[in-house]
Length: 195
Image (cartoon, rainbow, N blue to C red; front, side, top):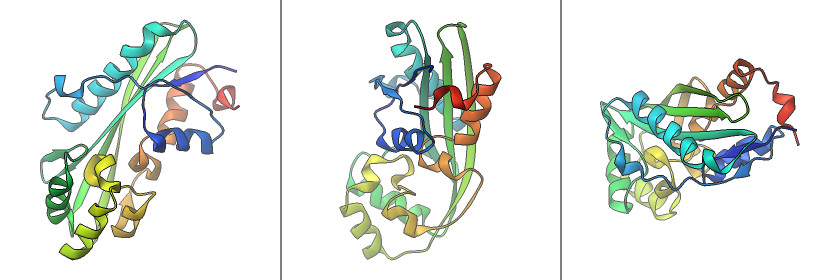
């Protein structure tokens, strides 16, 4: 079995991998994301995903290092995790009744082949129109403060998503179809990673 090392503290990403039979080694990179200031969402997530993976890569001599990063782009604004409840409420006030594009950058560093792949998946998310009281109640749960775009599709936030165009798992934190393709591109089968 080839080890997959996840350079992320995201419980959602870890759960997605576990659901498909991959038990990752979790090593959060603790990379300072504020170092990277890019206005193009795809360039931003790809760069952050790569830096996260590169940060922990020297610790491992075998296996695949996976870095991911997600942002939501709505009307030209890029949203990562909100800083506080007020920011989360303000974002939801802008997002409700509109759509946003969820970008997730994926990096795989193959330590044995000394190869790095970086790819991005984009999914369009349509948000319901909801009241200010509902927004405040949702934000008060704390869930939106942990998520890019201030919502968790796999949590309470799923109640406020009208529809999705594209990869659903991408919205949760990593695109499983894209991961399968990237593993294939590196010469692996997904079954090589099943625990």
